[in-house]
Amino acid sequence: MTKPAPILFPKDFLWGCATSAYQIEGSPLADGAGPSVWHRFSHTPGRVQDGDTADVTCDHYRRWESDVDLMHSLGLNSYRFSIAWGRVLPEGTGRINAAGLDFYERLVDRLLSRGIQPMVTLFHWDLPAALDDRGGWLNRDIAQWFAEYADVMFRRLDDRVNYWTTLNEPWVVADGGYMHGVLAPGHRNIFEAPRAAHHLMMAHGAAVQAYRATGRNKIGLVVNIEPKYAASQSDADCAATRRAEAYMNRQYLEPALLGSYPEELHEVFGEAWPQWPAADLRLIKQPLDYIGVNYYTRAVVRSDPTSWPLKATTVKQKQHTHMETGWEVYPQGLVDTLLWIKDQYGNPPVYITENGACFFDPPQVEGPVLEDPLRVDYLRKHITAVHTAMQRGADIRGYFAWSLFDNFEWAFGFSKRFGIVHMNYETLKRTLKSSAHFYSKVIASNGAAL
Ligand SMILES: OC[C@@H]1[C@@H](O)[C@H](O)[C@@H](O)c2[nH]c(CCc3ccccc3)c[n+]21
Image (cartoon, rainbow, N blue to C red; front, side, top):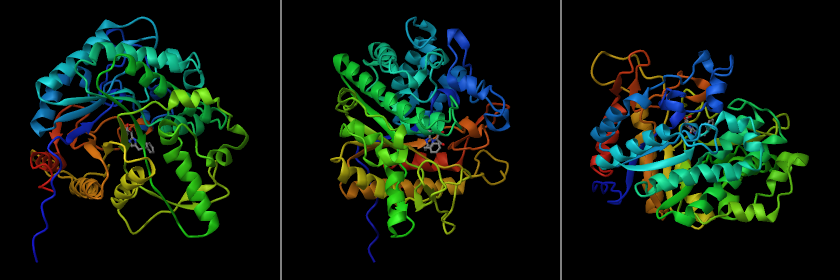
């Protein structure tokens, strides 16, 4: 029996970790920064578990230098983070806050000095509250507001940032923030959700268009993809699965890549689905350099007429491990997702811009390393899945583990830990978990240590 050949990734493969501004920085109003909708939302009683806010969280705003050194010690060759729009433009448009721009410029310079490539997300859910007061994602003007902000960032950092992302997961903003009301800004309105979704994508298009005027590097869109599997071959379950796939996985990819919306959305939204002008879709469909895919889990879907608005619900797969969010651990879903994108959308360059898991880490035996075997197993199986898809022809260019640190997990507050580095929220001490050591070895061996 010959030993299987070692898994090896391309020499220029990006190995990183991902974070976002509101989740790790703290000091949301420091040095002239304007509040975001998430600052408002987390300070609204009842919105976030245990009343948690990100006023301090990982205190990265003040500890960023040693945090970059920690990334370097892990051997990361890239790091995905987001810019807090309100630090740079406190009112969202117009006046620039120099201290905010300077923070991100210093962060980028330190990353580069440590041989770490920044991948910069312009919007990771923390919309300036001042823009929400003007309608936020419900106001068509936001496409221009976003392009203005993006242009400020491009002009300051495009000489050093090689990878830009316009939006992180527009689906989550539209679904969580406007359809179900469980994320900022907390609206629950089926007429608002498709409009917010559309304006998010128009903003994406306007920012990419602005980038092409001066930009010299790469820009893309990050979407969350959760592959949908029919619970049975019944017509009802297959139709429900198609609706779920259109609503989460195609509603954003297809206007961006194809310039059209899936037909199923008319059925999902009914009278709430607007007839969009063709010019809007032309703005959204800007040529992209890559697609970022955030993958965590899959969904097995059955028809459920009582479920709003999809008339579909997921079927728990009790035979598999689940995370503390209730998400099934299913690495095959990542292979299926990457091959689906390859086959359906012309094999665009893809980065896995987020992949990770939150498990209740076992009671910690005292010692320098915190053991998190379930997360090690999750990362091993999902990075192997990436390699499998690449061997079958998918054009994957990098992998970012979510997340570098335990951090503020939105409406879950600090109750969910996704980090490969443990965060003590009282002392702010960073402690490597065994998954950090594992990931570090995978990077150093370019995959052979899997
Ligand atoms: O939940 C873990 C991470 C978040 O901390 C990131 O900010 C966000 O980009 C992100 N996206 C997803 C998958 C999409 C999703 C988010 C929330 C709820 C359901 C699905 C998981 N995560």
